[in-house]
View (cartoon, helix red, strand yellow):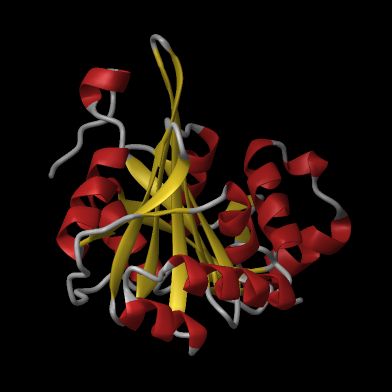
Length: 246
């Protein structure tokens, strides 16, 4: 696959092998194979024996990450996985859905907006107050790479949404998505891991909560999910380094 880099905008599109090569080159130029290095040089991503200056901020975030943010989104058609290295200025590797990724620096305060963009978070009707207990295997099926597995999972999901007939009908029609947001960062007490997951249908949003029964789907709103996404990120009190604005 080719590497595409625009030195004016700083936009970089590349495949996983080239991305790993670029990161390795930033730390140890001698560790990168000739074929990958030739592609990076040909695109202009590597110039004068170093990554292009427009890329060095994002690469610094990868090398000096204070935490990680992963965003998975799945539906009937595809599964995408986006990765961010959280730092004072963060880096984002955006899944473009064709086997390539866009790599760029992003302001840490804008990470919640990126999550909303990746997941398509937007206002939906409010579902009736009820809940549905589901099995962890259902969430695994909905996020599986194989389309038939996701289809089987969606059929099970539709049955589980019996308390909300409109949402169940939307799922049966293939109009659903699952979003899973994971954050991990080191803290004085050890590594902190947080997860937020929800099911989106045109009839309403359902957050995945966990209690002693296992995963439970409960109605929620886009505003509540936005606030939950913001709350996932580490605070300066937790790390001593990262500020967060609500």
